[in-house]
Image (cartoon, rainbow, N blue to C red):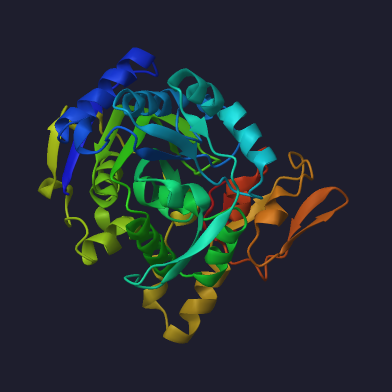
Length: 378
């Protein structure tokens, strides 16, 4: 479970990605170890929002196509599914599939696209902080789950990849409810780990050909890395991927907490790597502004620490020149602190819980995450 397959892929070209996917399956025991003829296989992608592939916001469709084609060749029946942010409706899914290129990927590979927006409650008896989840219907229908995630930095969790990709199994506007329920970062990340353990993807593929750096998962910039990764352990995969873009394990809560639970090693040096050597491709990604720490807060009296952290914490800021008044931010806000005034979004910052769902879901990048003026230069 601590094995990660690595393949160098210089650009999004179908033959290169097809060879990479075949290599991953070969490294990890062969595709027949996972896929049997007639098996119903769910490809869980990152379908965060309707963005073109070149923005690096979602899993690239050519990688999804390559995985789907390999599974189909092995006799599997493939369904591509995810629940984007915002309302979980067939109309939103249809637009997201079209804009992200997954519609064409499904057509070329013979996979089906999911339009069933039903969900069911399932118990997670081994959960540490969450023992029940509402999960989208395709997960229940699948004999096998393969996750196909995207490498990105993240304004709330610092990094997002394999583990957080499972959050898309929670339908639509129920995701903000979990943000509201688990407001502390460690609690939220423990919940993500609980969900990932429940989802139990047999393999997780990672699109790291071009990742996103800066204020991801939707407001950052594309950054080439030139790799695809694959592992039976989403936790081991995140340990390696976060290391490759410059994070220490203790800086990424999902990695740190997974290691504490014994779900992955404490260091990437304890992983077994197969395929290509990833070291030459490692590069430090720009960090999200919101993950900056107020490192001196522990040097002041304890009664003042919480008010100071609240005062200096990074917060969402509306760029009114860009805001188009679509209401996506208000719909995705867990505590419902955003309203439209004269066609522009307005945030009640006193009630903001800094989950950054609004920034994540803004289709025009009109929401920035800003540090306190005390920590901004210029």
